[in-house]
Amino acid sequence: QVQLVESGGGLVQAGGSLRLSCAASGIIFRIDTMGWYRQAPGKQRELVAAITSGGDTSYADSVKGRFTISRDNAKNTVYLQMNSLKPEDTAVYYCNVEGIRTNWRPFDSWGQGTQVTVSS
Image (cartoon, rainbow, N blue to C red):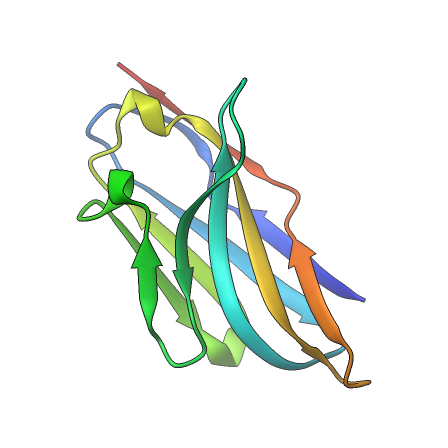
């Protein structure tokens, strides 16, 4: 089993910042892509940002220049630094981690979700 534990969500005013963290644990041999998704009420889950094992990053157009994804491979942790937050960033944020277990089987795990609310 691979478990993901998220932290860092909360309530912030527009223009403020939050930093999300997601730590992976369990029978992990290798972690490949790590990402953050979000789902607002009544909307589909969407990819916010992703980072490969080599450090290549990608972002949704709506967050480019405001959000930064990073990872600490020694801690099996992915971060999402969110600056200049807008009310439309309000959503439940989920981390997603893909990799290989120690039994050589692939995994694709999701965090429990953390609420981010941006007030205007």
